[in-house]
Length: 62
Image (tube, rainbow, N blue to C red; front, side):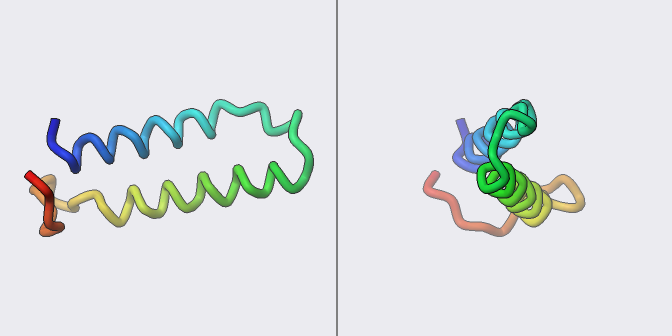
């Protein structure tokens, strides 16, 4: 699997897992950590997604 695709898949999987957490069961500090992690992953996802659907210019180890 292409490294970029694999990394994107991992980010999506982690974001999905964070979104499924029942944050009502967490204390305030953990709730804040989950929210921060979710926000950062969404930001990274938007930054690494090509706007036109083409490959990014980021180097890969292919």
